[in-house]
Length: 137
Image (cartoon, rainbow, N blue to C red; front, top):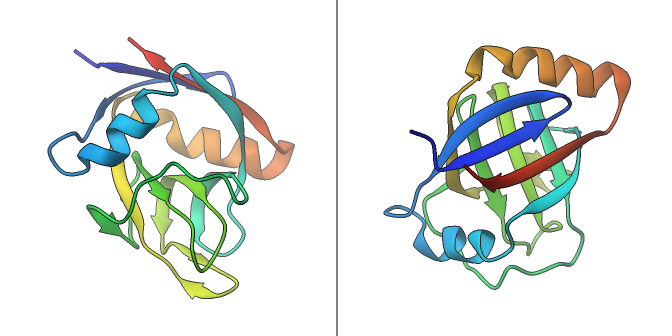
């Protein structure tokens, strides 16, 4: 059973928080649920969509950080060298910005609907920003 429901661009996914690996990030994001925004296609990273958050701070540091999220892994970059952002990989991703390679906290893993990820990525790439909503399942 999934503890999260993520709806993006008309596609629905189930997911789980990675509490054991990124407890502070999970707690900070969970406190903001339901969370609604828009995803746009990544600029430098490859096959991913992201939520740019500018100078917004979740109040967390690095934990369970990766530069290579697998498809269905969601990472939070807490800010610093580049702006704060949330990234969802749908294919091959090397997380980066105009400042170079970055690492973000892997805090959510999608567990259902993964076969829809490439379609979501292509929709965002060719049709532009899409609504995304995170809520408890």
